[in-house]
Image (cartoon, one colour):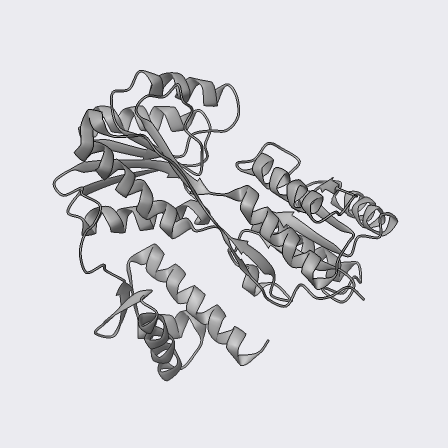
Length: 353
């Protein structure tokens, strides 16, 4: 791993610690990362120069904006999202936007986006006298329909994050990543490198954004005149038949002469890259790999090219949409906001052999 990438890894770990704890100390990061105090200070200075953190005595804290633009001063905002690293970034960003704008912010996490989501959201609304609510609804039935019915009868401005608010919800807006655009970015990147036999390795179950990813991937390949639209379910590390399924997957890739793949979901992309190593397939010399999602992908070997959803911006805009709705009242025009992901090119993609 090059010195530049080593620094990038450290800085992403520092940012993750600040998102988790709100503040870090140089001494604490020295212990966590095993780097010298001078190196940690240099990383903090680099992040501060980019506006990502704020220097404080002995360490760094979350960056603060110079002025609040969300229009939420004096309001109480609630948020209910699953508890995992992807959502932690969004909730941290929403909290920072709300608090810096003078609002009270109440966060509730759930183990997943199942039936408990509705109960937690209903309890929060009933107990906290909220002015507005941000949440990530379930995507599978019957939980999705149950929450939809509850929202339809809720006279509270609501913003759905990483979901699309249906037109039958008169008080709901939405903001999230344009997953179709993100998948198209990956397809175009691989095409520009010279790949013509590309496949998408996707979740075997219904997942948020998967339909949009597949649509964007297919549309991009069609526009690029790539005829074969190849797709295959992903193999999961906990599957008891993992070895058999992996052998079948790699046989399928060889049969279709696939030279590049996009793997939906960053944990699965990291696992797939490890499996390539186990099966003697060199990345990217024999197979280029793009991850959809950019959590821990830099720690893979090699570091993975990744589609990066704009999670921090999703969190900030969710608060701003609530502020606009509460300020405008009946005159507010509901918005459905899609934000373009970016492509972070690393060492897992190259021209085909």
